[in-house]
Image 1 (cartoon, rainbow, N blue to C red):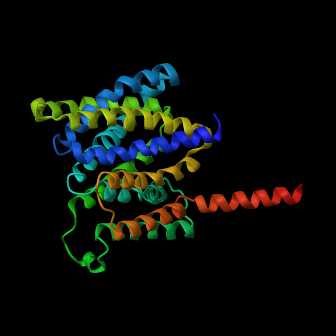
Image 2: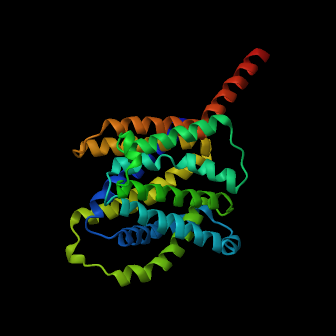
Image 3: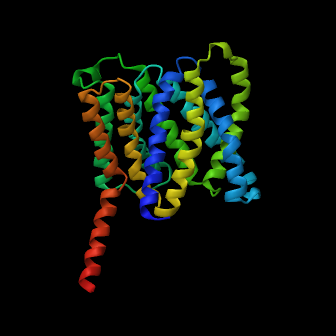
Length: 305
């Protein structure tokens, strides 16, 4: 697979994930977060499980031995993150949700320092600080005095919670040796077994579900759950997680563009906060240091030649 094809797959993966924020805003008006999560992932399992079984062909003995961390992944990343995300979209805009979620890489680095004893450079500390300021600007809507007020958008605060939940999901995921698609499929299966009683207890009136919600669930199932994840993992295997991670910054951009196309306005504080988040993530993720090391190595090679 050549470099151009990898870039195309990564762009498509982030575009499809961005659509999840936009469609989620419409679907949550008719379906509860529990039913959005349940229906989306039950359908996704119909494709992810066969891919795991016939393509990745995992060692099922190791999978069974990892059932506890896989269950935790399901509770955090499949149930927790999605329910908090869709609940947040009932109160805030898709653009705000995507911009706040962009601080995720910074949070993962920060929590990895305390939980996995990973080191953090001065540049990464500065980057984390900048990205948090960007998220804060978005939450307080550019009003510096708003930080002293107790009235915040509930959806924005919920997205901070979603970021923290996804951070723990990512850290646990680092410690599991199960192949990625298999890990997602099995954790989703365990999560749906846990969520099923709550979904059926809550109930669903199909007569009140419009075609927009049905199309939204189908989109989330086909594109956000299956296509994005498969495209992402194909690309990561080719160029590595650090290079692929750069493309995650496209999610808020695509979300904003889709929202603009649907008539939503983009505010100045969203642009400013988003830029600070991107700059902070760029520094915190270590991409600046990796880039400098690459240039230095290239220069040394040129001198040696």
